[in-house]
Length: 192
Length: 220
View: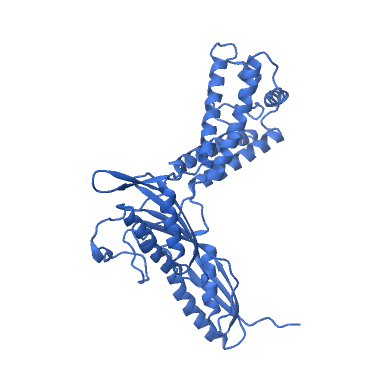
């Protein structure tokens, strides 16, 4: 959701900049503009006084300008805050099977995932964050591999053991996960 | 323009047993860990583009906020700020072929192109997507980690004194220095060991290899 909005808005702003900047550049360098375009030659100006005073005497002009700017400010503020905030699931709904439900604290499940991942062969450190909805949680995990660990095997173990156990113990049908693997920085050492 | 969503592969979630792995047409050449079918093209990780979005948001917020403040102040009877009067004068006086207008337009167009590129490309070039061994798990291996694994394995080949590995997006470059044994033997061993290791990384696209072995440089 947020990533879609980010890419759409960033692309839209980029498109506006390219169209405006490119057209000013083209007209300014002498390309003949089409008759309907806002600039009619290289001696035109960016924003003439006549353009600026055009609607100034209309009663609706300033309220509309102020409203549009206010909407811009609010949307930009919301968008900025959305970048800084990380969505994190606080609790997971556990279906107990008897028509009741139980709530599992998200931090608890994250902690279990991390400690189980760190106990695996070849994993030095791990991190996990739950996202998604509380009935269909998702996991974002990061593993830091020990020297001489095999990434494919470590991932396989993590998927089957840590993720599998977390999924089964919370009674979830599925626990989709996104895992990033890194390695501990270490010097090359000669094995003799 | 922008490609907002990454294509989510449709993964069959039947409990079909091993039969579902038997379809032909998988691009994977390596038969080690079972790969979930339909995940042959899991594709890249798509960045959320938080930093560019935050910067664009700050610029929009700052620009429209200051303008709003000044317009409201003028409506309330104060006089406009100096910069706004100067800006209006410049905008009305400078023709389009003025060098500053052209420079500004060029910068704006370049910035716009950059933003479009950011919006349309996946980013996260340092994360190599891994094969799906489990239908629910998407994994990526950091390039540095892949290079380090290859380096560690290469150091185990006898005759290798030191080794440098550069991991590119689709190619691993191994530069080894060998202080004993025939260079050809060392190279053959390295080829074999690195080839196996690269497959063991479990990446969706097995990177190509370039292995070079040299003698240590003479001192003095």
